[in-house]
Image (cartoon, rainbow, N blue to C red; front, side, top):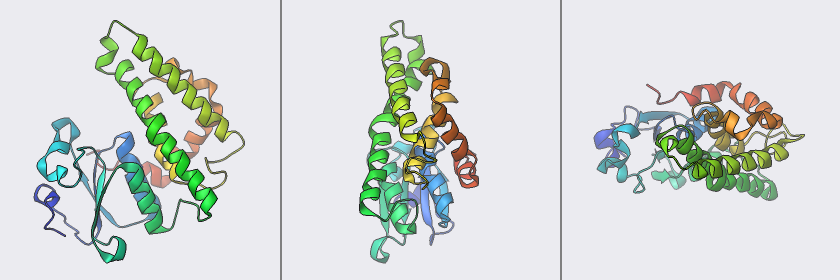
Amino acid sequence: MTTHPIFDKWPAAHPDRLQLFGAPTPNGVKVSIMLEECGLPYEAHRVDIMANESHDPAFLALNPNGKIPAIYDPDGPGGKPLALFESGAILIYLADKAGRFLPADPGERYQAIQWLMWQMGGAGPIFGQLGFFHRFAGRDYEDKRPRDRYAAESARLLGVLDDRLNGRTWIMDDDYSIADISLLGWVRNLIGFYDAAEIVGFDRFGHVQAWLDRGLARPAVQRGLVVGSA
């Protein structure tokens, strides 16, 4: 395992464990929360994205797209090592590996994956763009149409999620799943780090707020949110 180029920069102290390379961003915490929820032994390596470490040749050997998170599992399918990137793919892999947080029933399984894809293709990118135009460099742009566009779409997506959670404890009814894990960090960031609660009218979405409170109260979520923060 230690022959992989990633370990030239981030050596493994426990090479028999699953190796996580990430940072505590909304995408990064998906995987750390999942690992904590599953109880799988792992070793975390912080990738300093502000120092552009995700474009270091060692990291690019693991993920040619240059984005966190990524994992290296020395005990992958068939007992062979597996390198994997894209947070959604990693969540599905870990759910299958641990046999948890993804329904066994085929119909329900695809419904959970459907909501994971909704986060990957909708909520994540849109919330991230709103964060840029509302909190970061884009806030200084004189033209506020991009910010307003992403604020309106973020609010629409929150409405979709709020409707789904009406009468449900979790996205998949009573079963906490990778659909929830994929979204918790993004909704938390939207109203926290991005400071966008007011601009999206978050107070309207009571079912989302209650769901977020339930998720953030989980001990494994609390642990996962701080992995790689120091």
